[in-house]
Amino acid sequence: MSSLNFFDSNCMIGTVTVPQPRAFHSAEALTDEMEFVGIDEALVYHALAKEYHPREGNEVLMERIAGKEGLHPMWVLLPDTNSDMPGPDELVDQMKHRGVRAARLFPRGYGLILDERTCGPLLGALENEEIPLFIDKDQVDIKDLAQVCEKHPGLPIVLTEADWRSNRVLYPLLRDLPNLHLEIGRFQAYQGIEDVCEKFSADRLLFGTHLPYAASGAAITMVTHADISDEEKQKIAGGNLRRLLGITSPPVVREGKPCDDVMAALRRGERLDRPLVIDAHCHMGQVSGFAVCPNDPDEMISLADKLGIDVLYVSHMASIGPDCRYGNDRVAEGVKKFPDRFVGYAVVNPRYPDDVEPELARCFGQLGMKAIKLHATAHGNYPLDEPGYEAVWQYSERLKLPVLIDVPEGGYERLDRVCRKYPGARIMPAHSGGSYEMADKSIKLAKNHPSVILEINYTPRPYAMIEYLVEKVGADRVIFGTDWVYRDPRPQLGWVGYARISPSDKEKILGGNMARLLKDATDAIAENAH
Image: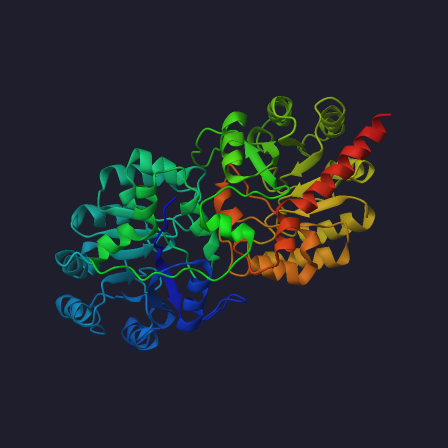
């Protein structure tokens, strides 16, 4: 892979009303992060313009990034409906005069409706100058977005923060609206980048991180390890944004600071060549809420080989949904075909209490499973300490089985009671790195119970979260997982790979800790069989 020039389309500086722990606020901290990971340039707006008022926030932005190589201003705009902003033509003239090539709107944040009556003149002024407009997905109704694209076909619109569950809605828009583009930071659908490139064009995708909220290595790895051409990667990494902004000067080039072998391989777009990489959180099958690309065992192993993932712990979506037995059988087929690559999660539904113990006995006596997956949220938020799960904790304690758990509302208190009753159960709260609030709950549980191990994955990939978990509970208590096929595995891999932790800590998280659990379970199951 040729060297990529990364131009981040989604960055913010400045303090916010409710800060995220460990997030940075200054332009200097932003450029330090860019230097560390190898992002060359960034399009930046200011928090004051988002949460206070654009007129003043935009001015502060210009002051704070003045003289900062590679930082380009993006102004937050408002229509002049209340005379607190210049008229559209005057506003756009000011942008052009001061070298501002991009605009943002926060319609819901500022009490706006994105329609022609309210925003039409401003949108028209931007369209006349072909100034791209960026809008977060949670700030706009998709129907309103589609109408704006139709009414202003010459206005490039970039939808930011569109997540992996959006594809059934977004694909018809991408098909019919050529001026619509997607920023990829949260668009972590399995094979999503490849799918958009094939169905539409790489020209429609823009690299973005959502710094300082999100870890940048996750978004970088989505591009470097995408199964697309080098030319398409270069477009997504920065070429498309440079084209939309009309920048023709040579890009700023940052080499990235010295790094360990894991991060270096990810920067080069190479597979990891580690002693062992184990993905502790995978799924097979289809999903009702959004579309997923084909994910039969052969296809999953093919991608795992390209990334350097050696072992995948997997459950089936049908088990999490309506039919545990059917899903467990499909997982067993995958394990039988690739016995050294798949480890099966047994899934049971406590809403069918008479079936729980017999299904566990079948999974561990006949199907070769070596772990348990609980999805209490999907099974009607069943309480984790109620009788329907009693057999699960007994099996986990007796056979040293890891139990991966999507923790429902109020579930941490119930898990605490489970841990006290079954201290030998190997409990792994899933998505422990999803937010600092989730992390603190998982950390508290882990500190109280030595058998608890924290699985990391989640779409927001909060900035410095891996470092936070390692600091609070130690690298021995943190494990790598991706939620594949809910999400693509690459951003979660980059999240760990670019973390500012030691190489030995990365090895533990990426595979060493799960290898230890796998050996314990394998030995206990074999001993119990005799």
